[in-house]
Image (tube, rainbow, N blue to C red; front, side, top):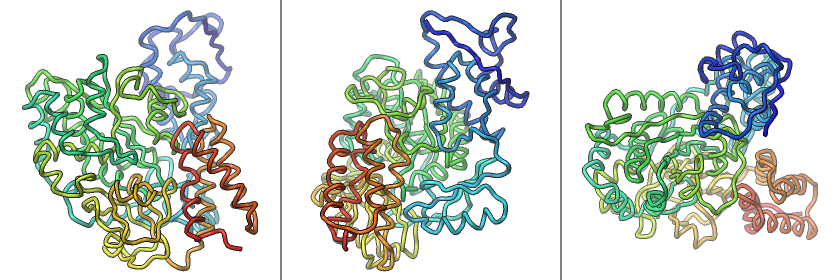
Length: 549
């Protein structure tokens, strides 16, 4: 039994218009309509529509932020009424995300990155504040190839600028749109999974899990399956998915649709990072074009297969890149990770079997279906077939996205980008590791042999003049800020790590404290955030890049 008591605050007409534009007009006095009795209602039990209805909570909050500029208590009340969700839970979700303001801004708000690559962000903040702009420090905004990243709200926009694209182009090459979907529909769903398995494609989001294995597990689950595209690219130094969404959205839409056909799903969700408004717009446009051409919706390409995609926007939470936190966010809850098992392929979105793939992973699928598994395997190594997108930034002449066969030496990539002899390279972003060996093979087995992870493909080069202690402190502060706080090892450990690095001087005691924190977070944290929050610092100490007297 749940009793919902609404606050006295009332939404403005503009706020009501925004809420109803997402949730529709009120269909009863208890869902946003006029009431004549007390502002309470007792509901016993939850109908089957409630979970799907609640999943519109974050889209409504994002719409309010974009249209009004902040989320008032009156708006909280309106959302609570329309969704039949306690106001305290709406408030809890709204305050979870860094891009949602709970107080009225005095003017434009500009979020300025002060992270690993954009270390001059503090200077830019001072300039903006001198101009009377509400400039705020922000973690990585995914603009590492464009200098100090900025995100201006009301409306949300990111700075214009070209992204360098280089290397051996396969995934980024132009090709016939939706030819992969046509090829897939000419096979049985299980045969499509066979082709993907034979290609050896591994997830490009960081975990490198075999895609075909994941699809087959979901296909064996109970009906009501979902496909989710994880486009919440938030790892510092990573911006490849921004390029794919902005310039190759059709391939991602096609990949999601093929995945839906293969596993027997009729609905997909694309969860796109809130800091990428232009990429989101391009993706929405690609969905519309696919529907018009008959490649999405009902009776796709004249068959009895139906599949459609909904777009959901994140709102500034690094943790939502973790797959189960992302599912909770879509469902209208705080973006906190779930314990595993069960895994999403068994119990995922709305409790149903769910395939979650990264943007780059899905963009590879059409090519595999069009050209075949053998052609895909012609690039890369036997254990790491195919090409990989690398986001290269830092002290390089030509930052940008580079597509190269897996197994390419790190030094070759850096030479292409104009950084032949860096002091150190951070591979995998803040959750990755420092390396100094430029002969490192950029493959999954090469990374394992070196005791590191390729992660999402972030490559940040640091020249000899860079203060790597400052870089490590920024990474530690990033994790302390982005921890969701759900589990104690991460909630406490990330803060203690940042504090330990901030203290002056070094010695055995400091190293012992950092080692203990590292072990506790790595072994006991619920999700990958806490498990990798110390990896870069650990590698910097091991290589002697920090820790001197």
